[in-house]
Amino acid sequence: MDDWKARTKLVHSGTRRSQYGEVAEAIFMTQGFVYDSAEQAEARFIEAGPDEFIYARYGNPTVRMFEDRIAALEGAEDAFATASGMAAVNGALTALLKAGDHVVAARALFGSCLYILEDILGRFGVEVSFVDGTDLDAWAAAIRPDTKAVFCETISNPTLEVIDLPAVAEIAHKVGATVIVDNVFATPVLSRVLDQGADVVIYSATKHIDGQGRALGGVILGSKAFIRKIVEPYLKHTGGSMSPFTAWIMLKGLETMDLRVRAQAATAQAMAEALQWDGRLDRVIYPGLETHPQHALAGRLLEKGGTVLALDLKGGQAAAFRFLNALKIVLISNNLGDAKSIITHPATTTHQRLSDAQKAELGITPGLVRLSLGIEDTDDLIADVKQALDAV
Ligand SMILES: *Cc1c(COP(=O)(O)O)cnc(C)c1O
Image (cartoon, rainbow, N blue to C red):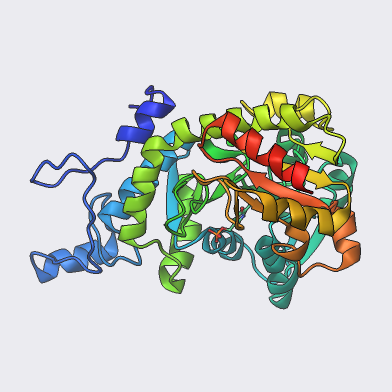
């Protein structure tokens, strides 16, 4: 099974069949599990085997199938599934850190990740230093002998900066810091972050893993020791576990994820190329374009440029709003990685909370829109975007 290729793993890894021999994965919609005897219950509370369950907050057969399948794909020893991507980010950080610890994080982060690092961790006495994630000297200057963890998004939201993960990990590992990456934008299909120095990988399964806009979910992947000794005790007692029904949705999502993500990335590349010299745009940001500042790095770290691109419209917010309102196929919404193409205006939605100075520092200009490509026909999508630009 270890030598299966990704697409085989995504269909078959982790499967557990009941006595009925069902083809599609069963939903074990149960909170609890019956023991044959009091002695068996006692033994299981001392140490549960890989297919022995106690309570759904601790684990469940459908959830375990999902954890094993995504771990097989990622090449991780183990995984813990969570109720949302944010439960995964919060779980990984809070399970590891304690008062007095120091963390270094890239500044360009998903809004809620920034809230955890900037507001919540500080309240519990964790010191966080923020750096420009693309500046290796800044990482080297900020990481101290007592730095416990570093945190970054491998491709940042929404300006799609690519972090030199192998270089950051090398600096972090010199002081023994744990490298935690939120790898949503790079996707588990197009990147191999555990091979590039990450110790812990986090996904919002809400995005490409479900990929069909149905459920919130998340997952933390890493060594068996990290997942079972650090993450599991924290999450099973604090309640961030994934529901069996969600796990079933995510298992079915994994089956088609490779096909979807590759189609989405191909469309994103075609869209970026079709728009890159369009005079109505100040910038077309996509790691797969040669004009992207980290294009060469992206080529080393990622199989393709990803499924999301950012466009900066001339004419600021008014132009951006007219553009969004004129789209006929692409939906105005703030999810990404979905089968449906989705567009958002970060400055007034996902990053509204930031001050104007913070937005400017992160490159979130009034004209910037983030476009997540779906699996619709590429030519239809390019035509839709072009007619909406005409309408601006
Ligand atoms: C969406 C997202 C999250 C949060 O995931 P939820 O499932 O919405 O909780 C975290 N990080 C990144 C990069 C995301 O895109």
